[in-house]
Image (tube, rainbow, N blue to C red):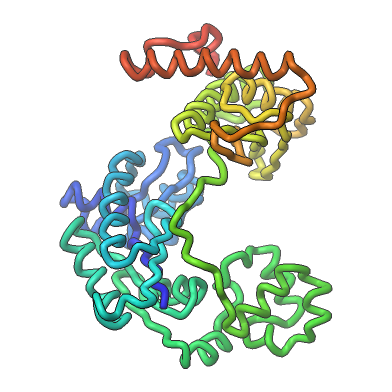
Length: 387
């Protein structure tokens, strides 16, 4: 049996915990400019139709008397670490999915902690006693079932689906609740007459696989209650990124390159902190009409150099043909591997030596900023108020 623990409105709940005057009020977390987006919202704010990723100006329109707060990531991380540490007291098999979400495999833990319902209830009690926050817990014979169950009685819920209950439950489960079913896939499924996992079971297998490919196979397995995804105790980051919603829409590539430079430095700093190098650099662009595009390049040599990441992202931007102005720009790095891992020798010696030289410079800058603060040393091009 597997538990899925999902903290209730985590960011907003932490803010309400730290400032009791916010309890019972509409709390919206995110950038404070109208061009930013909502990161999280309290349940009180959600009643007004506010949700994550909503443009902040819309949130202000829907809830003008709400309390708008910038996210305090360091505080949220500190609370999260206490929660995850507590979960490991119940089982060594804990998979941290995000800052406010985790799976716990409690198979074989009944002698120590009791039956699944007792364990789930005890976890809820301990989290409440330790950090004074509520969570919703789902329990099921697989990760998929546990995750769906945790969402059924939010907030502060506890839902258990025993193996013998799964088949009946899945038959009526709407496909939009299945992880991986986005708007596009949902429309396609609706055109096929599929509204629930029960409909998936009745659909001809050949036709389903022809139209949906591998995801069709995954849907068939879930509809049959088959989910052997293991709880991964070692979670490795797949990517790091930095992005920013611009104060005004921009089509000046020189100005956009300044944003990219700052973001490349932030991404490279994260890579060095994690002790990894990236094989792929991605440029993310969101236009004024909210159309989003990405462009990626795979590097011949993995890097954690801010200069290499910047030059790569800048080339992607300069090649990109802009038809409308840009409202958001970001840089990401993926294909991560340990910086101590052996790398294939590059055919281009000059490229590898330049990459290594810049990484040495970056590490020197890291040492200086760690001792004297982030703003003590900056690139000359970023000291001008170009944005």
